[in-house]
Length: 473
Image (cartoon, rainbow, N blue to C red; front, top):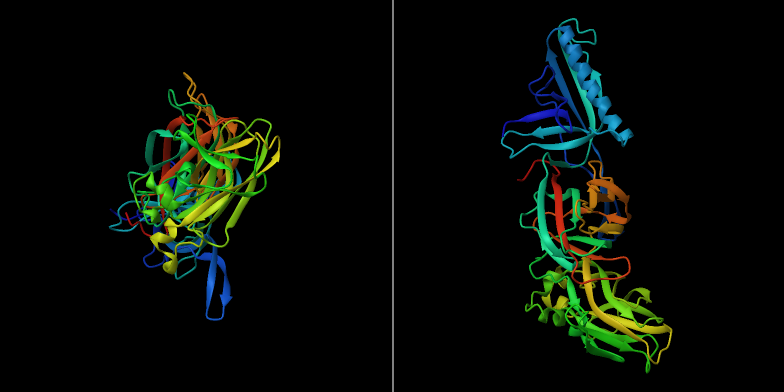
Protein backbone atom coordinates (compact mmCIF):
# COMPACT_ATOMS: atom_id res chain seq x y z
CA UNK A 1 0.00 0.00 0.00
CA UNK A 2 1.17 3.57 -0.67
CA UNK A 3 2.74 5.48 2.21
CA UNK A 4 0.41 7.58 4.35
CA UNK A 5 1.02 10.08 7.13
CA UNK A 6 -1.71 12.47 8.22
CA UNK A 7 -3.52 13.90 11.20
CA UNK A 8 -7.26 13.55 10.82
CA UNK A 9 -10.58 13.54 12.63
CA UNK A 10 -12.32 10.25 13.40
CA UNK A 11 -14.61 10.57 10.38
CA UNK A 12 -11.73 11.69 8.14
CA UNK A 13 -13.42 14.87 6.95
CA UNK A 14 -10.89 17.20 8.61
CA UNK A 15 -7.25 16.37 8.05
CA UNK A 16 -3.75 17.59 7.30
CA UNK A 17 -1.72 15.46 4.89
CA UNK A 18 1.90 15.44 6.06
CA UNK A 19 3.25 13.83 2.89
CA UNK A 20 1.42 15.67 0.11
CA UNK A 21 0.18 18.84 1.79
CA UNK A 22 1.59 22.33 2.06
CA UNK A 23 3.55 21.20 5.14
CA UNK A 24 5.53 18.02 4.45
CA UNK A 25 7.52 15.64 6.60
CA UNK A 26 11.22 16.42 6.37
CA UNK A 27 13.16 13.31 5.42
CA UNK A 28 14.77 11.44 8.33
CA UNK A 29 13.30 13.80 10.93
CA UNK A 30 10.74 11.43 12.50
CA UNK A 31 11.90 8.79 14.94
CA UNK A 32 9.08 6.51 16.00
CA UNK A 33 9.16 3.87 18.72
CA UNK A 34 7.00 1.27 20.42
CA UNK A 35 5.47 2.20 23.75
CA UNK A 36 7.61 1.79 26.89
CA UNK A 37 6.30 -0.59 29.53
CA UNK A 38 5.78 0.75 33.03
CA UNK A 39 6.01 -1.49 36.09
CA UNK A 40 8.26 -2.60 38.88
CA UNK A 41 10.55 -5.50 39.70
CA UNK A 42 10.76 -7.77 42.72
CA UNK A 43 14.44 -8.62 42.93
CA UNK A 44 16.12 -11.83 43.96
CA UNK A 45 19.83 -12.39 44.27
CA UNK A 46 20.30 -13.53 40.69
CA UNK A 47 17.21 -12.32 38.91
CA UNK A 48 13.94 -10.42 39.12
CA UNK A 49 10.22 -10.83 38.62
CA UNK A 50 8.60 -7.99 36.67
CA UNK A 51 5.15 -6.69 37.48
CA UNK A 52 4.02 -4.78 34.41
CA UNK A 53 1.20 -2.31 34.97
CA UNK A 54 0.67 -0.39 31.72
CA UNK A 55 2.13 1.14 28.60
CA UNK A 56 3.15 4.79 28.72
CA UNK A 57 1.91 7.27 26.11
CA UNK A 58 4.42 7.76 23.31
CA UNK A 59 5.97 11.19 22.69
CA UNK A 60 7.32 11.71 19.19
CA UNK A 61 8.70 14.62 17.21
CA UNK A 62 8.86 15.22 13.48
CA UNK A 63 10.00 18.20 11.43
CA UNK A 64 7.76 19.68 8.74
CA UNK A 65 8.89 21.92 5.90
CA UNK A 66 6.95 24.10 3.50
CA UNK A 67 7.73 26.35 0.58
CA UNK A 68 4.85 28.49 -0.63
CA UNK A 69 3.41 31.98 -0.31
CA UNK A 70 3.25 33.43 3.15
CA UNK A 71 -0.54 33.34 3.04
CA UNK A 72 -0.64 29.66 2.15
CA UNK A 73 1.98 28.72 4.75
CA UNK A 74 0.31 30.58 7.59
CA UNK A 75 -3.04 29.07 6.59
CA UNK A 76 -1.53 25.58 6.66
CA UNK A 77 0.06 26.18 10.07
CA UNK A 78 -3.23 27.54 11.40
CA UNK A 79 -5.10 24.46 10.10
CA UNK A 80 -2.64 22.13 11.83
CA UNK A 81 -2.89 24.14 15.07
CA UNK A 82 -6.68 23.89 14.91
CA UNK A 83 -6.47 20.08 14.70
CA UNK A 84 -4.11 20.07 17.68
CA UNK A 85 -6.55 22.18 19.70
CA UNK A 86 -9.46 19.98 18.64
CA UNK A 87 -7.60 16.86 19.78
CA UNK A 88 -7.23 18.35 23.26
CA UNK A 89 -10.87 19.40 23.33
CA UNK A 90 -12.06 15.83 22.73
CA UNK A 91 -10.26 14.63 25.85
CA UNK A 92 -11.63 17.51 27.90
CA UNK A 93 -15.28 16.94 27.02
CA UNK A 94 -17.22 13.69 26.71
CA UNK A 95 -19.80 15.52 24.60
CA UNK A 96 -17.38 16.01 21.68
CA UNK A 97 -17.85 13.54 18.83
CA UNK A 98 -14.65 13.77 16.81
CA UNK A 99 -11.43 12.44 18.27
CA UNK A 100 -8.19 13.07 16.38
CA UNK A 101 -5.66 10.55 15.18
CA UNK A 102 -2.24 10.14 13.66
CA UNK A 103 -2.71 7.91 10.60
CA UNK A 104 0.33 6.09 9.25
CA UNK A 105 1.10 3.46 6.66
CA UNK A 106 4.65 2.66 5.60
CA UNK A 107 5.40 1.75 2.01
CA UNK A 108 4.41 -1.88 1.52
CA UNK A 109 2.48 -2.14 4.78
CA UNK A 110 -0.81 -4.02 4.39
CA UNK A 111 -3.16 -1.21 5.49
CA UNK A 112 -3.39 2.09 7.34
CA UNK A 113 -3.21 2.10 11.14
CA UNK A 114 -3.91 4.94 13.53
CA UNK A 115 -2.99 6.12 17.01
CA UNK A 116 -5.13 8.43 19.13
CA UNK A 117 -3.55 11.84 19.71
CA UNK A 118 -3.58 13.05 23.33
CA UNK A 119 -1.97 16.44 22.77
CA UNK A 120 0.57 18.16 20.52
CA UNK A 121 2.49 21.40 20.02
CA UNK A 122 4.25 23.28 17.23
CA UNK A 123 7.62 25.02 17.27
CA UNK A 124 8.61 27.33 14.39
CA UNK A 125 12.35 26.75 13.86
CA UNK A 126 14.94 29.32 12.95
CA UNK A 127 17.62 28.56 10.37
CA UNK A 128 19.36 30.28 7.45
CA UNK A 129 16.63 32.29 5.75
CA UNK A 130 13.97 30.75 8.02
CA UNK A 131 12.21 32.37 10.97
CA UNK A 132 8.68 33.08 12.23
CA UNK A 133 8.44 36.11 9.91
CA UNK A 134 8.31 33.73 6.86
CA UNK A 135 9.96 36.39 4.72
CA UNK A 136 11.58 33.85 2.40
CA UNK A 137 8.29 32.04 1.56
CA UNK A 138 9.53 28.98 3.42
CA UNK A 139 9.06 27.55 6.86
CA UNK A 140 10.35 24.70 9.02
CA UNK A 141 8.33 23.42 12.01
CA UNK A 142 8.83 20.86 14.76
CA UNK A 143 5.69 18.94 15.65
CA UNK A 144 5.77 17.28 19.05
CA UNK A 145 2.84 15.00 19.80
CA UNK A 146 1.81 12.60 22.53
CA UNK A 147 -0.16 9.63 21.27
CA UNK A 148 -1.80 6.43 22.44
CA UNK A 149 0.75 3.68 23.16
CA UNK A 150 -0.84 1.37 20.58
CA UNK A 151 -1.76 1.65 16.94
CA UNK A 152 -5.10 0.22 15.88
CA UNK A 153 -6.87 -0.64 12.64
CA UNK A 154 -8.78 2.23 11.08
CA UNK A 155 -11.82 0.02 10.35
CA UNK A 156 -13.47 -2.43 12.72
CA UNK A 157 -13.99 -6.16 12.26
CA UNK A 158 -17.30 -7.79 13.23
CA UNK A 159 -17.93 -11.40 14.20
CA UNK A 160 -21.29 -12.78 15.31
CA UNK A 161 -22.82 -15.89 16.82
CA UNK A 162 -26.54 -16.57 16.74
CA UNK A 163 -28.55 -18.50 19.33
CA UNK A 164 -25.70 -18.97 21.81
CA UNK A 165 -27.04 -20.75 24.87
CA UNK A 166 -26.21 -18.58 27.86
CA UNK A 167 -25.32 -21.39 30.19
CA UNK A 168 -21.56 -21.17 30.13
CA UNK A 169 -21.50 -21.86 26.41
CA UNK A 170 -18.50 -20.84 24.31
CA UNK A 171 -18.14 -19.19 20.93
CA UNK A 172 -14.72 -19.59 19.34
CA UNK A 173 -14.06 -16.83 16.83
CA UNK A 174 -14.02 -18.09 13.25
CA UNK A 175 -11.45 -15.51 12.14
CA UNK A 176 -8.18 -14.96 13.99
CA UNK A 177 -7.88 -11.63 15.75
CA UNK A 178 -4.96 -9.77 14.16
CA UNK A 179 -2.39 -7.67 16.00
CA UNK A 180 0.25 -8.29 18.63
CA UNK A 181 -1.75 -6.84 21.53
CA UNK A 182 -5.37 -7.52 22.56
CA UNK A 183 -7.89 -5.75 20.34
CA UNK A 184 -10.09 -2.87 21.49
CA UNK A 185 -13.69 -4.02 21.73
CA UNK A 186 -15.58 -1.13 20.23
CA UNK A 187 -18.89 -2.85 21.01
CA UNK A 188 -19.80 -6.29 22.32
CA UNK A 189 -23.53 -6.84 22.50
CA UNK A 190 -25.83 -9.55 23.79
CA UNK A 191 -28.91 -9.28 21.59
CA UNK A 192 -32.32 -10.86 22.23
CA UNK A 193 -33.95 -13.21 19.76
CA UNK A 194 -37.39 -14.74 19.32
CA UNK A 195 -37.95 -17.51 21.90
CA UNK A 196 -34.59 -16.67 23.45
CA UNK A 197 -36.00 -16.30 26.96
CA UNK A 198 -35.47 -13.58 29.50
CA UNK A 199 -35.54 -10.93 30.60
CA UNK A 200 -31.92 -11.43 31.60
CA UNK A 201 -30.85 -9.46 34.64
CA UNK A 202 -27.23 -10.57 35.15
CA UNK A 203 -24.72 -11.46 32.44
CA UNK A 204 -21.16 -12.72 32.74
CA UNK A 205 -18.90 -12.46 29.68
CA UNK A 206 -15.38 -13.92 29.68
CA UNK A 207 -12.83 -13.72 26.87
CA UNK A 208 -10.19 -16.45 26.84
CA UNK A 209 -7.03 -16.41 24.78
CA UNK A 210 -6.14 -19.29 22.51
CA UNK A 211 -3.64 -20.70 25.01
CA UNK A 212 -2.78 -24.32 24.26
CA UNK A 213 -6.11 -24.51 22.41
CA UNK A 214 -9.78 -23.72 22.92
CA UNK A 215 -10.93 -26.71 20.88
CA UNK A 216 -11.60 -28.95 23.89
CA UNK A 217 -12.04 -26.23 26.46
CA UNK A 218 -15.20 -27.28 28.33
CA UNK A 219 -16.92 -24.30 29.99
CA UNK A 220 -19.33 -26.43 32.07
CA UNK A 221 -18.50 -29.27 34.45
CA UNK A 222 -21.40 -31.50 35.51
CA UNK A 223 -21.02 -32.28 39.21
CA UNK A 224 -22.68 -35.69 38.98
CA UNK A 225 -19.58 -36.77 37.02
CA UNK A 226 -17.48 -36.43 40.18
CA UNK A 227 -17.08 -38.41 43.41
CA UNK A 228 -19.66 -37.85 46.12
CA UNK A 229 -18.61 -37.16 49.71
CA UNK A 230 -20.45 -36.83 53.01
CA UNK A 231 -24.24 -37.30 52.73
CA UNK A 232 -24.24 -36.64 48.96
CA UNK A 233 -26.03 -38.70 46.31
CA UNK A 234 -26.85 -38.38 42.62
CA UNK A 235 -30.53 -37.66 41.99
CA UNK A 236 -32.55 -37.48 38.77
CA UNK A 237 -33.91 -33.97 38.17
CA UNK A 238 -35.36 -32.77 34.88
CA UNK A 239 -34.57 -29.15 35.82
CA UNK A 240 -30.84 -29.90 36.15
CA UNK A 241 -28.60 -29.17 33.18
CA UNK A 242 -28.06 -32.81 32.19
CA UNK A 243 -30.97 -34.37 34.06
CA UNK A 244 -29.00 -35.14 37.23
CA UNK A 245 -27.92 -33.26 40.32
CA UNK A 246 -25.86 -33.98 43.42
CA UNK A 247 -28.09 -33.69 46.49
CA UNK A 248 -26.52 -33.06 49.89
CA UNK A 249 -28.39 -33.89 53.08
CA UNK A 250 -27.48 -32.48 56.50
CA UNK A 251 -29.32 -34.85 58.84
CA UNK A 252 -26.15 -36.82 59.65
CA UNK A 253 -23.30 -34.36 59.08
CA UNK A 254 -24.44 -30.72 59.29
CA UNK A 255 -20.93 -29.26 59.74
CA UNK A 256 -18.44 -28.09 57.13
CA UNK A 257 -17.05 -31.11 55.26
CA UNK A 258 -16.28 -32.04 51.68
CA UNK A 259 -19.52 -32.99 49.94
CA UNK A 260 -18.12 -33.90 46.53
CA UNK A 261 -15.00 -33.70 44.36
CA UNK A 262 -14.50 -33.50 40.62
CA UNK A 263 -11.29 -33.66 38.58
CA UNK A 264 -10.73 -32.33 35.08
CA UNK A 265 -10.22 -35.91 33.93
CA UNK A 266 -13.58 -36.99 35.34
CA UNK A 267 -15.38 -34.01 33.79
CA UNK A 268 -13.79 -34.59 30.38
CA UNK A 269 -15.16 -38.13 30.07
CA UNK A 270 -18.54 -36.62 29.22
CA UNK A 271 -16.91 -34.63 26.39
CA UNK A 272 -15.00 -37.68 25.07
CA UNK A 273 -11.48 -36.28 25.01
CA UNK A 274 -8.25 -36.32 26.99
CA UNK A 275 -6.99 -32.85 25.97
CA UNK A 276 -7.03 -31.62 29.55
CA UNK A 277 -4.49 -28.89 28.78
CA UNK A 278 -7.17 -27.04 26.80
CA UNK A 279 -8.71 -26.17 30.20
CA UNK A 280 -5.68 -24.16 31.35
CA UNK A 281 -6.50 -20.62 32.47
CA UNK A 282 -7.95 -18.31 35.10
CA UNK A 283 -11.69 -18.43 35.71
CA UNK A 284 -14.58 -17.19 37.77
CA UNK A 285 -16.48 -20.29 38.89
CA UNK A 286 -20.29 -20.03 38.79
CA UNK A 287 -22.08 -22.74 40.78
CA UNK A 288 -25.65 -23.62 39.74
CA UNK A 289 -27.31 -24.61 42.99
CA UNK A 290 -30.32 -24.23 45.33
CA UNK A 291 -31.48 -25.19 48.81
CA UNK A 292 -34.71 -26.14 50.55
CA UNK A 293 -36.95 -23.11 51.13
CA UNK A 294 -36.14 -21.50 54.48
CA UNK A 295 -32.69 -23.05 54.73
CA UNK A 296 -29.33 -21.29 54.81
CA UNK A 297 -26.22 -23.19 53.76
CA UNK A 298 -22.59 -22.10 53.63
CA UNK A 299 -20.84 -23.37 50.50
CA UNK A 300 -17.14 -23.12 49.68
CA UNK A 301 -15.25 -24.10 46.54
CA UNK A 302 -11.70 -25.39 46.98
CA UNK A 303 -9.06 -26.28 44.40
CA UNK A 304 -6.35 -28.92 44.79
CA UNK A 305 -4.78 -31.91 43.08
CA UNK A 306 -6.07 -35.43 43.51
CA UNK A 307 -4.78 -36.91 46.78
CA UNK A 308 -3.08 -33.65 47.79
CA UNK A 309 -2.75 -32.96 51.50
CA UNK A 310 -4.31 -29.52 51.34
CA UNK A 311 -6.49 -27.34 49.09
CA UNK A 312 -6.82 -23.66 48.26
CA UNK A 313 -10.18 -22.30 49.49
CA UNK A 314 -12.09 -19.72 47.48
CA UNK A 315 -14.68 -17.41 49.03
CA UNK A 316 -17.57 -18.90 51.00
CA UNK A 317 -21.07 -18.11 49.84
CA UNK A 318 -24.30 -18.34 51.83
CA UNK A 319 -27.02 -20.03 49.80
CA UNK A 320 -30.66 -19.26 50.56
CA UNK A 321 -32.32 -19.41 47.13
CA UNK A 322 -34.85 -22.22 46.71
CA UNK A 323 -34.79 -21.94 42.90
CA UNK A 324 -31.79 -22.55 40.65
CA UNK A 325 -29.34 -19.61 40.67
CA UNK A 326 -25.79 -18.97 39.47
CA UNK A 327 -23.58 -18.26 42.50
CA UNK A 328 -20.06 -16.81 42.00
CA UNK A 329 -17.73 -19.03 44.02
CA UNK A 330 -14.52 -17.06 43.47
CA UNK A 331 -11.59 -17.08 41.09
CA UNK A 332 -9.58 -20.20 40.37
CA UNK A 333 -6.54 -21.24 38.35
CA UNK A 334 -6.41 -24.48 36.37
CA UNK A 335 -4.06 -26.05 37.25
CA UNK A 336 -3.60 -24.43 40.69
CA UNK A 337 0.12 -23.68 40.25
CA UNK A 338 -0.02 -22.40 36.69
CA UNK A 339 1.34 -24.00 33.54
CA UNK A 340 4.98 -23.00 33.18
CA UNK A 341 7.73 -25.31 31.95
CA UNK A 342 8.13 -27.74 34.85
CA UNK A 343 4.35 -27.76 35.48
CA UNK A 344 3.23 -27.82 31.84
CA UNK A 345 2.00 -31.40 31.85
CA UNK A 346 -1.36 -32.66 30.64
CA UNK A 347 -1.56 -34.90 33.72
CA UNK A 348 -1.27 -31.90 36.05
CA UNK A 349 -4.47 -30.55 34.55
CA UNK A 350 -6.13 -33.97 34.54
CA UNK A 351 -5.64 -34.30 38.30
CA UNK A 352 -6.72 -30.75 39.14
CA UNK A 353 -9.57 -31.27 41.57
CA UNK A 354 -12.53 -29.08 42.50
CA UNK A 355 -13.94 -29.67 45.98
CA UNK A 356 -17.29 -28.40 47.27
CA UNK A 357 -17.55 -28.06 51.03
CA UNK A 358 -20.86 -27.22 52.68
CA UNK A 359 -22.33 -26.69 56.15
CA UNK A 360 -25.89 -26.18 57.39
CA UNK A 361 -26.37 -22.78 59.04
CA UNK A 362 -30.12 -22.24 59.48
CA UNK A 363 -33.39 -24.04 58.91
CA UNK A 364 -34.09 -27.70 59.71
CA UNK A 365 -30.97 -29.84 59.29
CA UNK A 366 -32.98 -33.05 59.48
CA UNK A 367 -34.88 -32.29 56.28
CA UNK A 368 -33.00 -29.51 54.44
CA UNK A 369 -30.96 -30.35 51.35
CA UNK A 370 -28.50 -28.59 49.07
CA UNK A 371 -28.82 -29.29 45.35
CA UNK A 372 -25.65 -28.98 43.25
CA UNK A 373 -25.99 -29.04 39.47
CA UNK A 374 -22.87 -27.86 37.63
CA UNK A 375 -20.05 -25.31 37.53
CA UNK A 376 -19.52 -22.86 34.66
CA UNK A 377 -16.07 -21.38 34.04
CA UNK A 378 -16.04 -17.74 32.96
CA UNK A 379 -12.55 -16.72 31.73
CA UNK A 380 -11.49 -13.95 34.11
CA UNK A 381 -8.39 -12.38 32.52
CA UNK A 382 -10.72 -10.32 30.28
CA UNK A 383 -14.19 -10.25 31.79
CA UNK A 384 -17.38 -8.20 32.07
CA UNK A 385 -20.13 -8.61 34.66
CA UNK A 386 -23.36 -6.77 33.87
CA UNK A 387 -26.12 -6.26 36.44
CA UNK A 388 -29.53 -4.74 35.74
CA UNK A 389 -29.83 -5.74 32.08
CA UNK A 390 -33.21 -6.20 30.39
CA UNK A 391 -32.37 -8.53 27.49
CA UNK A 392 -35.60 -10.00 26.13
CA UNK A 393 -37.17 -10.14 22.68
CA UNK A 394 -40.09 -7.76 22.27
CA UNK A 395 -41.76 -6.81 19.00
CA UNK A 396 -40.48 -3.41 17.79
CA UNK A 397 -38.39 -2.99 20.93
CA UNK A 398 -34.77 -4.11 20.76
CA UNK A 399 -33.30 -4.55 24.27
CA UNK A 400 -29.66 -5.62 23.91
CA UNK A 401 -26.90 -5.10 26.47
CA UNK A 402 -23.76 -3.38 25.18
CA UNK A 403 -20.16 -3.32 26.43
CA UNK A 404 -18.42 -0.30 24.86
CA UNK A 405 -14.76 0.68 24.94
CA UNK A 406 -13.97 4.15 23.63
CA UNK A 407 -10.75 5.16 21.91
CA UNK A 408 -9.21 6.47 25.14
CA UNK A 409 -9.90 3.08 26.78
CA UNK A 410 -12.76 4.28 28.96
CA UNK A 411 -15.62 1.80 29.13
CA UNK A 412 -19.39 1.91 29.38
CA UNK A 413 -21.93 -0.87 29.93
CA UNK A 414 -25.47 0.07 28.98
CA UNK A 415 -28.82 -1.40 28.02
CA UNK A 416 -30.85 -0.28 25.01
CA UNK A 417 -34.58 0.25 24.42
CA UNK A 418 -36.04 1.16 21.04
CA UNK A 419 -32.53 1.41 19.59
CA UNK A 420 -31.32 3.96 22.15
CA UNK A 421 -29.33 3.73 25.40
CA UNK A 422 -31.77 3.44 28.29
CA UNK A 423 -30.07 1.71 31.21
CA UNK A 424 -26.77 2.43 32.93
CA UNK A 425 -25.67 -0.99 34.06
CA UNK A 426 -23.87 -1.85 37.28
CA UNK A 427 -21.08 -4.39 37.39
CA UNK A 428 -17.57 -4.25 36.01
CA UNK A 429 -15.48 -4.51 32.87
CA UNK A 430 -12.03 -5.78 33.83
CA UNK A 431 -9.33 -5.63 31.13
CA UNK A 432 -12.14 -6.13 28.65
CA UNK A 433 -10.07 -6.54 25.49
CA UNK A 434 -10.28 -9.28 22.88
CA UNK A 435 -7.24 -11.61 22.97
CA UNK A 436 -5.43 -12.12 19.69
CA UNK A 437 -5.68 -15.18 17.42
CA UNK A 438 -8.55 -17.65 17.89
CA UNK A 439 -9.89 -16.55 21.25
CA UNK A 440 -13.25 -17.64 22.58
CA UNK A 441 -16.16 -15.91 24.28
CA UNK A 442 -17.98 -17.56 27.18
CA UNK A 443 -21.33 -16.14 28.29
CA UNK A 444 -23.65 -16.99 31.16
CA UNK A 445 -26.83 -15.15 32.10
CA UNK A 446 -29.75 -15.41 34.47
CA UNK A 447 -33.01 -13.67 35.31
CA UNK A 448 -33.36 -11.55 38.44
CA UNK A 449 -34.55 -14.44 40.65
CA UNK A 450 -33.83 -17.60 38.68
CA UNK A 451 -31.53 -19.32 36.21
CA UNK A 452 -33.16 -20.94 33.19
CA UNK A 453 -31.11 -23.40 31.14
CA UNK A 454 -32.70 -22.58 27.78
CA UNK A 455 -31.86 -18.87 27.57
CA UNK A 456 -30.26 -18.27 24.15
CA UNK A 457 -29.34 -15.00 22.46
CA UNK A 458 -27.13 -13.54 19.75
CA UNK A 459 -23.60 -12.29 20.35
CA UNK A 460 -22.00 -9.57 18.24
CA UNK A 461 -18.45 -8.35 18.78
CA UNK A 462 -17.02 -5.37 16.89
CA UNK A 463 -13.32 -4.88 17.48
CA UNK A 464 -10.20 -3.06 16.31
CA UNK A 465 -6.91 -5.01 16.26
CA UNK A 466 -3.93 -3.25 17.83
CA UNK A 467 -0.18 -3.20 17.21
CA UNK A 468 2.89 -1.86 18.98
CA UNK A 469 4.38 -0.71 15.68
CA UNK A 470 3.88 -1.80 12.08
CA UNK A 471 0.91 -3.96 11.15
CA UNK A 472 1.57 -7.68 10.92
CA UNK A 473 -1.57 -8.30 8.88
